[in-house]
Amino acid sequence: SESVSENDKYSSDIFAMDTYMSLTAYGAKAEDAVTAAIHEIQRLDAMFSVGNTDSDVTTANMQGSATVSDETAYLVEQSLEISRKTDGAFDITIYPVMELWGFTTKNYKVPQADELQETLKRVSYENASLKAHELVLKNNAQIDFGGIAKGYTSSRVMQIFKEYGIEHGMVNLGGNVQTLGTKTDGTAWRVAIQSPQGGNQYLGILETSDQAVITSGGYERYFEENGVTYHHIIDPKTGYPSDSDLTSVTIVCADGTKADALSTSFFVMGLQKAESFYENTDLDFDVILLTKDNQIYISEGIAQNFTSDYTVNVLKK
Ligand code: ADP
Ligand code: MG
Ligand code: MG
Image 1 (cartoon, rainbow, N blue to C red):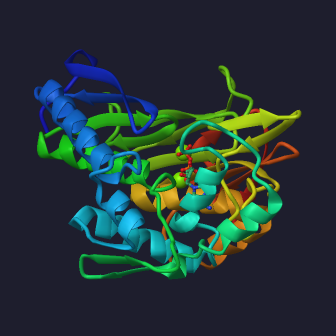
Image 2 (cartoon, rainbow, N blue to C red):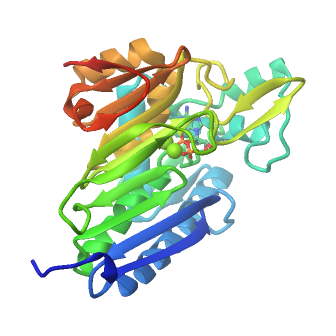
Image 3 (cartoon, rainbow, N blue to C red):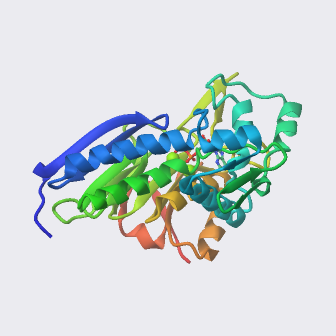
């Protein structure tokens, strides 16, 4: 391949999907590639947004069924697969509960217990089914792709970069990173994994190439009421913000869609279930977990590529 240097860099920052995003590509067509990728992000934002009255998702949520696009169908399929595999820790029918907590409007409130129980009756991934492009939602179920759409989007950005002949690039969608190839000097990308404490603190640095590095944590979106913090990742079994022993979950996987769904799932599952899932699954991915007592658990496939000041425990298959 032709030689590409730091000088062939083109970067752009945008706000979409309620998230600050940054795109970087290197090469002769870097600017065209980034511009095309931004258009794609805007198209996907409109398609997947529950706030867009014209989206497939909104139509299905309002009418109980809809004929949906290839991509909506793909995200529903992927979501249902991960729901089945995680025994419902991941569940796109969580939407009515998100609404009740005010996460959809930012008018946050702690719901009444009885109201929450009523709403929870509508929540089950088994209420959602797909036949070809016909999405059916039973029992007043409603869906949202908040736990999976950004991972799909980062994978699409990488595909577009490749279509423009880009060999080195990276996208960061609010802490959800995906890399293409290596850096221009041939060394691995160095991805800082955000700390739940925020600021400039991080859990460590992961050297990685051609992978999605997707992180879920309760610190990304939350509100406080009477001194209690309520975050935006809900345990579908209780309707409350998940209160597992994990404070951060990073999934490293070539497939951004799977990585995103799994990061949300593991956060809900907690260390023990996450560990046994990792040991037994046929899916190919790596993990970096942080527990409430500040222990890091990292899978053996990437342990050598991670540098951290924390105590690091290695997970083996
Ligand atoms: P972020 O979008 O902040 O990176 P996640 O990928 O973990 O974080 O997704 C959180 C979003 O996913 C929530 O805002 C909500 O839309 C949705 N969600 C919350 N709980 C669940 C769940 N148990 N399963 C699937 N989606 C969920
Ligand atoms: Mg995330
Ligand atoms: Mg997710």
